Amino acid sequence: MKYYVYVIRLDEAVIKSRKFRYHNPDMNTNLP
Image (cartoon, rainbow, N blue to C red; front, top):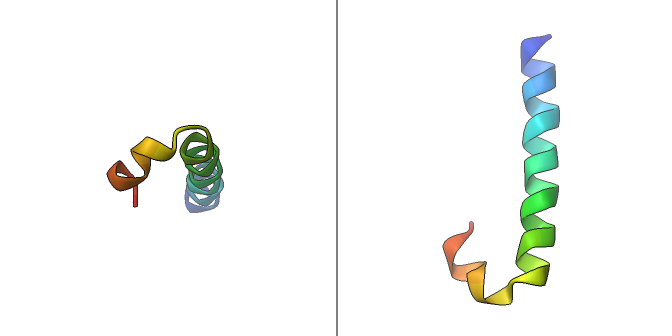
């Protein structure tokens, strides 16, 4: 169950990072 929650949080983090990169193109080199 903890693993399932961890996966959801990881997915949300990926989505947030994509939005962050979209709004801050200069930060692309600092994110995977």
